[in-house]
Amino acid sequence: MAQAAMTDTAESPSRPLGLRGVIADISSDQRAFKNVPWGKAMMWIFLLSDTFIFSCFLLSYMTVRWSTKVPWPNPSEVFALNIGGQSVPLILIAIMTFILISSSGTMAMAVKFGYAHDRRKTAILMLVTAAFGASFVGMQAFEWSKLIHEGVRPWGNPWGAPQFGSSFFLITGFHGTHVSIGVIFLIAIARKVWRGDYDIQRKGFFTSRKGNYEIVEITGLYWHFVDLVWVFIFALFYLW
Amino acid sequence: MAHAKAQAHPISVYLWTWGLLFVLSTFSYLVDYFHLQGQLRWSLILLFMVLKAGLIVAVFMHMAWERLALIYAILVPPVLVLVFVALMTLESDYTLITRELFFKAGL
Image 1: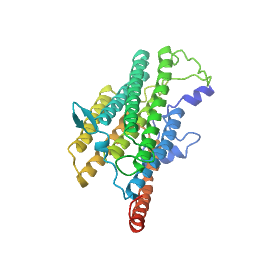
Image 2: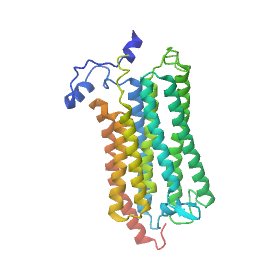
Image 3: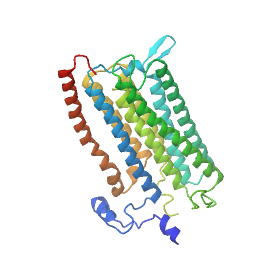
């Protein structure tokens, strides 16, 4: 019964909407976020805190870039690749962007099939998402080693303001770490979905609690957030 | 399991969003490819960025279908970051002016 009280998020359809609904929800007893499982609300709050971390990184990058007298290296040229003797600007970054967007698409469909209790499709789509993510990290490793080879360091680079290196390694490194953790998270949950943990009500190894398909949506929230952060990094760091 | 169908939307919604994100990313890449400069570059890059972020949050993260209490709790605090942006803009301008006044070669 206690279990049911904790996971049953169904609310009577008569709850007020709009601003009146906000006040009613926030001031209601015990649960402010109606229709949302607690795990999902917690993931959103974690993502909010992560938003502030990435905001601080991007803001410090903005500050050092605007306050330096030395010209900033042109990202369009720094991140260009030679393809067939021709320099194509930002091509690797563009491919990485498309890969991450595609991984978000497969993740969104995995969530949908998860709620439809289609174990096979959910697990496959999550593994495809993880494969996209892993290839993204691989390309980032390629990009890093290329730049390090060309002499970019956190304290200097051959083309201009030394702050370029520290901003680049901090921001893309932190994002790449998020992607890597997301890949591990995806594989772990995909394994549980594949095994049918959420259909046979198997208890979790660490938590000893029964899970359900909401975890697929929670994993998805994390993954879409990683894509969301990349949208801002792409626009503010690479296209600026 | 009354809530199991809470976030079940037709698959076409996701495919359309996916396609739109591809198109918007291509546009923002083309801004750089055609070397657009100045205010046009800036307004286009920021416009595509905001549209992409909005699509991801609203559709992929299902924010469009949540109750207003959660939407406000999650989306209002990041808006305050804009105040921080304004503060740091002033700060970096000040640092730049100081450097131009006192350093011959930049640091």
